[in-house]
Length: 318
Ligand SMILES: [Zn+2]
Figure 1 (cartoon, helix red, strand yellow):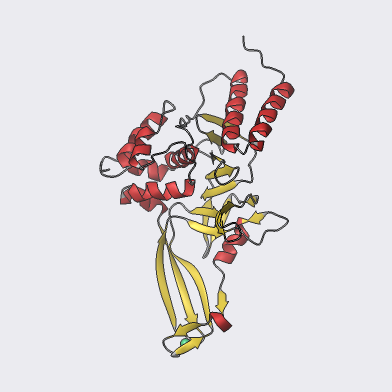
Figure 2 (figure 1 turned 45 degrees about the horizontal axis):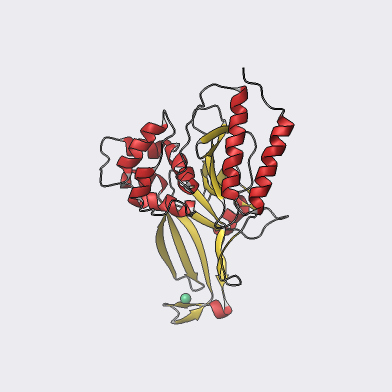
């Protein structure tokens, strides 16, 4: 019969290993070890088959696993790639196979990796970039689940205004204006949709006035996506460092969010990232539909119930 090791000893060992790994800036491995250890410990108490399956890591492909798990749990997307009409020229066919396997086992992602043209599986990459890459290779029926359109309006004081329409799969929010060191997504969205004035040196040429003039710019949603994806711009280029740097600022993401004008969305998944730019580890936190509101941590092969949120959210799905 399984006898659990006293939790204090067990946790202190895990924490020591993780600290050591962190010191060596290997948060990726530390995240894996923690996930594995916690999953093993949980299994000691409950040997029932886990409800959801994980995805095997092929080296450092946690960035891909976390995105694939969210796509699998996005019903509209899953239905679209599983429909009979999906063409083999799109990545839908590979995703369809993967999703079928995910229902009963913890598959590898070799075919997807091949389709995405990933040559070095040991290299950590950006989950958000691969989310967009998968959508760009998916059929229009599948990718339209995330498709929205923004209208950028530029208005001169004379009344002349021009609209520019831009399609999007993610709304990208800069992490700034933190309060007590925490970035609030609701405030960020308010700022995103607020009007800004371009005056002085920033004046814009107006065709009507035939001169540079004070101008206002603002953005509104022209097409609301079925699934709204909010990306927090954690990875930004720093001219001081002359390299990309990661902003590890904790964020406050609400469970419900309103987009102007009056459309509400409910959070069901986040892709989280711990560590720095090149040595971090990605996991996904997901609330599967029809599961009584329970949340789960998807850490590569290990899926465990999750009771508390971490503030390291990166890509947020509503
Ligand atoms: Zn004008």
